[in-house]
Amino acid sequence: MNKIITCLIIVTFFIHACHNSVNSYENNLGIKPGIIAQIDTANYTTIEWEDTVKNLGEVKQGDSVFIKFRFRNTGDGPLYLTSVHPSCGCIVADYSQNAIQPGEGGELTATFNSRYQSGYINKTITVTSNTSNGINHLLSFAVQIMDSSQLIH
Image (tube, rainbow, N blue to C red; front, side, top):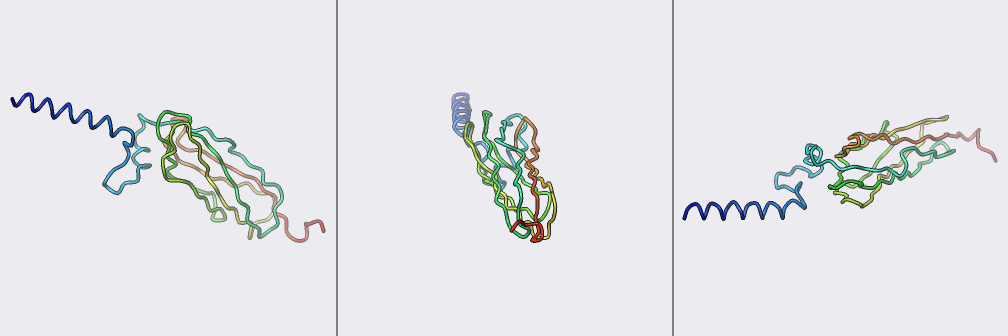
């Protein structure tokens, strides 16, 4: 009788475990699912960026520029952007910390403030994700900052 009960418990456990695999990174420990996904290297997914390099052209010194970097989850598991690090304090980046499911797309947005900048400059944003085609992805943009003396009237 104990063997039958033990077998039923084991079978119930496996059936329950299979149903939870859809959202396997959710937890009650207060750990962000993206952090757990970053550690789970056996289940990494892949990401495809629409464009990793942008040329913003000429910008008046002091103006802010809004930038979008679009991507798609091309793998089989949920995609998480786990961290985003702009190369300077003149860039503020925003991204979803929710899972991007296979086949779905998303975007990372950034605002670049050209105040105190001048000339032709290149800036970067490093994105860390749970992806087998590299966990760190480098996004960049170039811009020509024009002060008032360089503007054509």
